Length: 271
Image 1: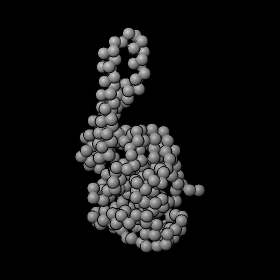
Image 2 (image 1 turned 135 degrees about the vertical axis):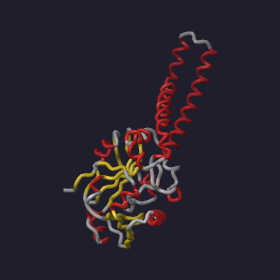
Image 3 (image 1 turned 90 degrees about the horizontal axis):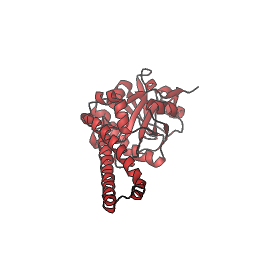
Image 4 (image 1 turned 30 degrees about the horizontal axis):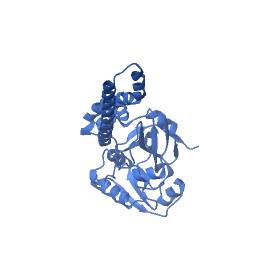
């Protein structure tokens, strides 16, 4: 459980003059029980899962959902085109690096030693460039990817978990009377597969244990997505505030304005 997130949530909401209240209650093991403890309806609950989606990069997400990032007034969004060019260069350089074995074929074709040494040096330079490109890409994407509306002093340390190529971390938020359909989430984000993160990754990305994660991303690598069915049904939403025994009831419109999530369709009604 996270006292830090509990405190940061209250600071964030107060700074934005949100209409909210904090409720103290007994920890509950199910969405139905915690709704009863809060005195709210099940459908008001905002559940949050920390997921990993494979087959798509941060740069591709920024390009595919360009309007979302533009609307959130990120000044660093202008770096996106540079990021995509860099990503293309990484792919080209990686192909060259993978062709190291071709040097043997060139040697069989009477490649002189000096030329072979030159090619080896070029290969080393390409690897260095590739590493630099990847580092720059990660740094630029992190600036415009997650925690879009969170003040820097409230953000979590973004050094962990380590970035991994062609996969992203997603905070999937949906109403508690629904269930997350990870296949739909994958399709909505143009990925190839989605799954829950490990407990360690979840802790590094949210600073919370499972069941206490609020519907806000405080981590630069964690993309906030919300199923559209959370909106338009109730005037208020309710969620655990980083702690299993404390919840926040928040005006739904205030949540949308402050969090500015990427709104998708990935939750199914529980029958």
